[in-house]
Amino acid sequence: MTSTALTLPPEPRRAFSEVLEDLARRPAPRLTLGEIVEAFGERGFGALILIIALISLFPWPPGSKAILSVPIVLLSLELAFQRDRVWLPRWTLSRGLSRQTFGQALARVMTPIRFVERLSRPRMPWLTGEIADVITGLTCVFLAVMMALPVPFGDLLPCLTLIVLGLGIMQRDGAAILLGMLGTVACVIYLFLVWAAVTAAVAAIGGWAGRLF
Image (cartoon, rainbow, N blue to C red; front, side, top):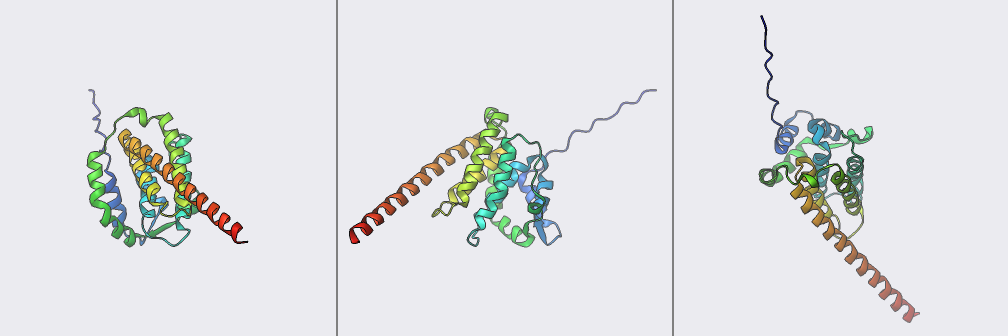
């Protein structure tokens, strides 16, 4: 007498929005970075970059953007060096924010998140392969550093670009990666324009001071 084993189909992967809602509903009063890492598993790189960049869009005290950029830099370097799973220092995993604050912020952005989810899908694999991940990871490092710089309005554009790239990494969506690369070019141009303006202003002030004295 022979028996045949039944092979159950794999459970469908939960949508990004569903995982976020589950995190917001959990009973513990604080949401930690380690909890987010565990919740997203293999999708952790893109999901964490997206979430931290999203959090960075909210008003924070001076210097907070520099602190928020540290885990993005670490995640991006791990992506560039082809790590399979997210690793972050123990002290960062215990960092977090009020779950109630997270839930309130999530409620404001859930509609656009669901809209983008419906548009996003795996495509353009040549932009989401191993070599592309190296380039994307290094690009995210640049954007995280720019986000931390004390540049007037210089954090908004890199934050938005990191959100798009994070989505592309998580969903293996080459179209989102391509859009994020175009956003990165815009960031470089903006940074160059700010640098040129500051250089011209310093030169003008120097010339005025020289004539004065």
